[in-house]
Length: 547
Image (cartoon, rainbow, N blue to C red; front, side, top):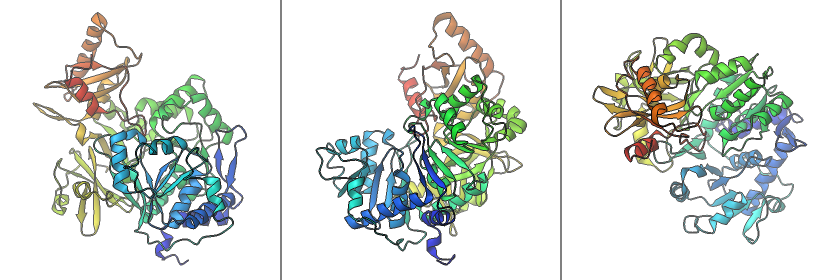
């Protein structure tokens, strides 16, 4: 196929190139089983071909949408690549967004295929109206008493040993729909074209220097699709993707050392407990070159921990969102070496310079739709505003949601700028600084307060595990999760709050914060287990539900 063909911008073709070059190299290892079953790239291709032929034989056609609720397995990646190959659109939705939002999202995307684990198929019996569009019910194993559900083994019998050609797919056609978690608003389906996946794969490979020599240990299952397309060996870790914060430090460390992993990725919630375990037991991960943490700002304490553990590597904190990934990048060593004093003074979190092909602007904060002319009034260095980005890896629209698309996108002569929904500034060296979400801004008589600069101050107290800026009753307040997990009262509480007040008075932006609450454990997002739900905390504070 010629290089200028529209089909070249297809992650499946990128994988095919790798399969051709390294057929007997291990592509995927399942670390959850004692004997660690694996697939070579040629075996991966065989599974892709089997799924492709079977789905085609059943009658599923290009353009249909497949709702995916599967646990990681040796079948997951081949199935998704088969869907890409056939032009079938996988839909990925976080079950943790809540029943109402989940059912709305399903109804909105009108899927015709449900590929899910047994519990989801049982639940589907109670929501027949919301799932009325489903024609094909598929599961990893047979489900009794549901004869309509086709197991993977039964599926393969529909068309054994047949090969299906790659569908004629334009690079700008819809490849997948990925739903946002809805942590700061209603969940939205982000349209991923085949070109977006292609561009993201190229960018991630470029910034992390991933090669076929690398062993990938992904804390986020979908990330393995990218790394296998780069030729790296990927692993299925002993981590439940529904509860990344509960990852077992001992098991994860054992697995990383056993497979000689060189590239680690995932939420800071995963690597926090694992880093503390490694530090406590004086374990060094000398083979690891890169640890990519994403999903939320990474604390300087966590960076410092891994600065001791990764003796030949570094932490990187790529900034982005479901709609735009990646946007910028910085290393942990650079943060600790150059930016720590500003961070500890509450200036914000430095999230690095734009990755190749991405442009960043800072615009005046607005809740309204923005026009092309707004881009001409971008703010100069060190002025705070909302972050907007453009580039080849920036998605163009939300699925059948014109209102959200119009509010989040700025169209500039063929270029699409995405409003990240975050507050920040660019310094004089074009480094981006993150201050918090726009929806988390708190009004005060002297102006607006951003979450990150305030919380960075209170998090320095030795008894504070993490903090959250919220809108209390008529005034800003800070919610504290203590390091000991306790809710203290009486004289201990008064002393603790007095110490927090003294800390606040040292800095102009926190000087007006005099009210504090405690909570045993912060409410966090389901996807990364790390983003604090500040809106929920604000409602709790205003209703008098916090001590």
